[in-house]
Length: 570
Image 1 (cartoon, rainbow, N blue to C red):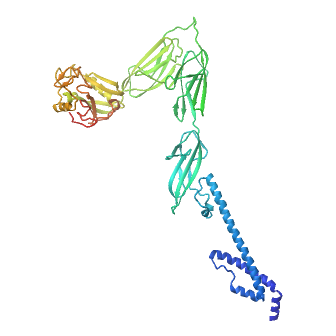
Image 2 (image 1 turned 30 degrees about the vertical axis):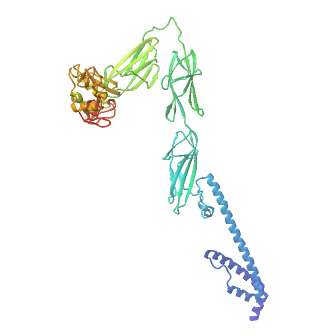
Image 3 (image 1 turned 135 degrees about the vertical axis):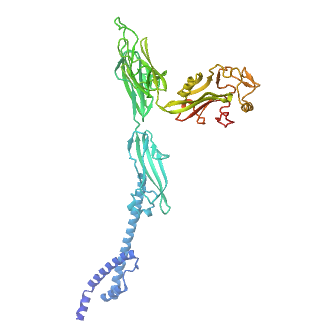
């Protein structure tokens, strides 16, 4: 039995060696892989395996040679394979890195500061999104104010800086940017830092187109036929909800506006071409209108001449209203009954514009002033003219009461008008109440401006004709000394013809007002003890207010209302 076994070994020893070497190679590959992961010793073949090989081979030289040859070849192949894999990985990293760099130029949303060594570890994160925006790339808008939001996606990163550039110019961004007409480039640049303190920038680019739409608004009607040589119309353009002037041409010649957006031209007999041009050189909108002027010829059969007629809906003379706004319609006709467009409407001597006008009719909405308003309508037909006048009393509802008084204690008149209660009405300025109060007590007055605007009380007339009744004003002694000290009173200078103890009275003793006695005198008012910095026409009283109209000799410094301090309150 033992001999047979030995014979079997000798007979098939080369086959057994090959099988053993194959088994050894397989084990070596397995151990090599494990060594890379677990960092095992480099030699994958144990001493026991070598001893077994020697016994099976039966020849140390043969086994050693075969094992050496096989081992060397195997190690070289493994090293070459390992080297090839390493070079392949490095080349792949370079390719991906180069692709990342190139893409960063095209897609600024990729982190430009990731190095190639870091990129290998982050290959699956090359499409990482740091932030998004609500901007639609390539969007077309019609308003110059463009709103958008920047939405952050990475909560573990700190924002060091946010930059918004519009057409390569950095802007202060608070949710809105202003676009230029046409193509606009919007660039968002975010600077981040991570937990290690490393900073990097991420950018995104967008294109937004701003199309500023222009519209032309006009009262012109194409192919309109008129019978008057003098032709009026309105024309203007609208861009981004703003009204803008336009260029107007009549039969090729430019026409200037007579008022804002209003034109008045002289037509030629027959067809007249009116051209309207709006916009700039880059974007021009043009419209053309043909106006036919049919010249009336003299005839023995002309209709009877005479003044035009005027009728007004909703208006009655001396009517009283409680609403500030008043709407009415005017109709004008020639003496023969034809529609007449040549008429104007005035409110308190100021011309007002119509809401619409067509074939001798026009509608108006105006704002009335407190008390009496006068509406006048003037219509003209050839050389004939007609007028219609309406008095409208606007009376507002009462909103409470205030107290008014007038005094001049600085010159000896502590009470010209005693404290008087008045009823307040909504929207009525203090100047209206002052005028009513003076008139109720029989005082005439002089003023500049209007009660609704720029009202200034210059002087008040005495009811007796002489405020001082031929005597001297009773200026308090200490106030007089102060006036002389401040050189507001100078007895060495004959400013006025009457001289009372160094104090000069006005030439007109029947008035008391500005520049009397001193060049710093006049009327001032206070409300609840405070002197407002606005005029009477700009002050609106409230329920319970107390108004004092007082005469000052020192720009208010003698009655507690000085701008640069006070010397007392006389």
